[in-house]
Image (cartoon, rainbow, N blue to C red; front, top):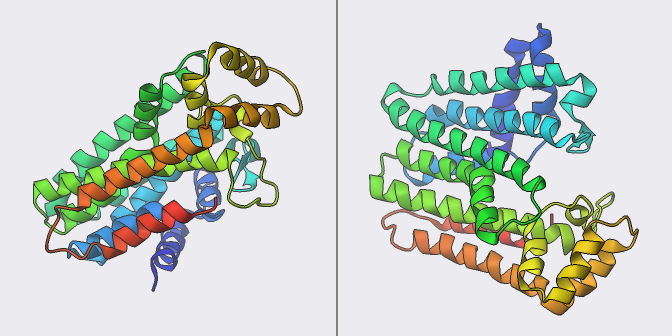
Length: 315
């Protein structure tokens, strides 16, 4: 059974125990409306690469997916989002109180799932998981704070997305090395790979929002600009713009001009924002690859293929 099918099957079986209580209906709903399951698949692949037992790691893979969706459930409340994966968000379908409480239950469920992995791995996994979870909360707080600030530096933004996005991906790779009983040095290297790959992943999300490789039905080009999000193309533009360009950007970003995305894109073209964003993405993919270069005795080709597919994705 392939990775995604395996995760879907395990999730389906896991959720059957929560059929008869209102607390778990939002949990089942969110976990059943799709998702690429990238994180648990990465974790299981990393376990295999380092010679660990995938069956023993399955509860941790489920824990990662449950925890990830818990963060999405609460993020949607904080962002006041109405849609998640093309469906109503939990707080819209039920209410905010239900979404908060069901999200809390998901976090607890993630820890209960970790209890099911072999005891020998639990201390290291709990340490790594707790570190990741707390940093993720820091990243979410920074993201909310940035919405209220006029100025955010590129280093500040990179630290925020590292915590909000990369640390969970880094944990998945690190956990694979832990289950494979790799040395602490290799655990650190594969973790750094995941961190830099996660940064490239988020930068590419920012890039594809403004410069999609193909137009998907219902996709709004430049949604980050319309919502005044401080994504990397916008931050690069402000950082590189002259005073006149900066004034034009700030006027347009705060306007209700229906053509403001198109007008901003013209200014961005003069600043070479597209090319500079592409260069940043390539830089972090290269950094991630460098983390693998000194790991010997392990077939890393599946990981390299995964990174390549991320780089080439269209959405």
